[in-house]
Image (cartoon, rainbow, N blue to C red):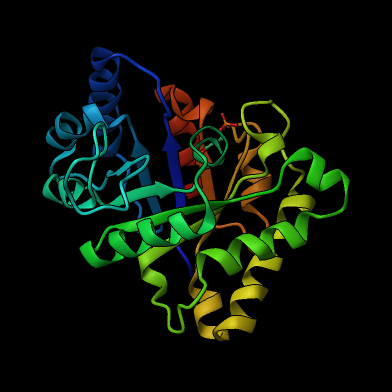
Length: 255
Ligand code: 13P
């Protein structure tokens, strides 16, 4: 049985004081929450990572970064390397979020480079894919997903599925309050899993965790998680509030 991932992507939100208060609260929630199946991941801004690791030390709470450089080191002003993340014992890193694709022009081949750097350091990549509204309306959802997967995994003939998670995030559902229906999400998740089966094999495909992202909240997470190919959520807005994040963790535990 695959784990269920409740992953928060905070984007560029919260003050340091708010960050610390959230994690102190989450540590306290975890003193009475014990689950072997739920993986809790929160990805705060880079600048809070070190303090966050300190607060969550010795707990099951996993901390992720929201991005990383594809370069090892050098004159890349403003960038953060995978080695720097490793130095803080960061366990996960989001790559290829649609906001990075849209505002920072990230491509599938760049996403592959970042994934390979993360893999080399033993940090699990959360690889994001998803179609825009125009692409969905033009009935191009599956071809867009396929092109993204082909680009990201191009030339990778063997895979270790413990090195990444996939997050399917339809761009039209991000921050819009519009959630893909469980049926819409499930059919894309199944398509993604089938793609891995065709390109690699069934065992690899069955081992890959595929998270759904796009306006996930306590009121809709249960039905999304009840779909056979949805293994968790990558959650923006609703992960910022401790009560709502822990509520989603508790709902997932009941699945
Ligand atoms: P929302 O949950 O705010 O729609 O954001 C989703 C997202 O982009 C997570 O990476």
